[in-house]
Length: 181
Image (tube, rainbow, N blue to C red; front, side):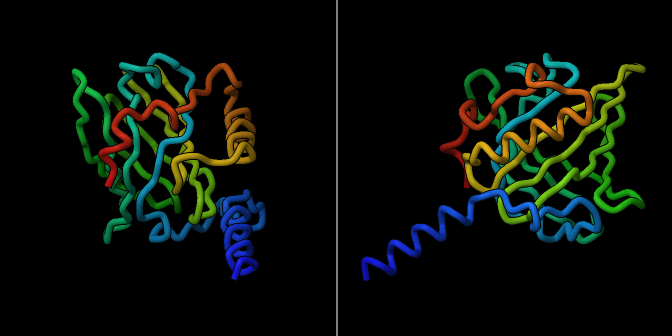
């Protein structure tokens, strides 16, 4: 019995490891994205937007794949010490893994990569009043991911010209965490 429990415990720990063979970078099955997610890290060319009190300082609760191919994100954020929920619907484009949304300008949201089971990385390109902002977000199925996921996120950020100084860790800053469903 003890051996069985040890085996189960070890399999749960190894199940949280980054598996490069499970990473999907195209031909996404968006239905597999549906479910509970947690904000792990964000990066941006405009740090004010992803900092506390920034318009993109939001924490994901869930993502739902819609029948029309769009995505519905449920976020929460703090307003005057209270947790507020907001839902955002992104419209699917003709490209697999690409969506649009109008929020403080024109936005293009792309799935950068995922393994569906543990993490997903999104790339948002916002154009507002002629100014472009790039934002990357790392979400996890669990509240904390191992360092290998964060290192991979850093590498993805680097491909968009974003260094460690552009990255914010979100997982420890979610004051609404206890309100998650």
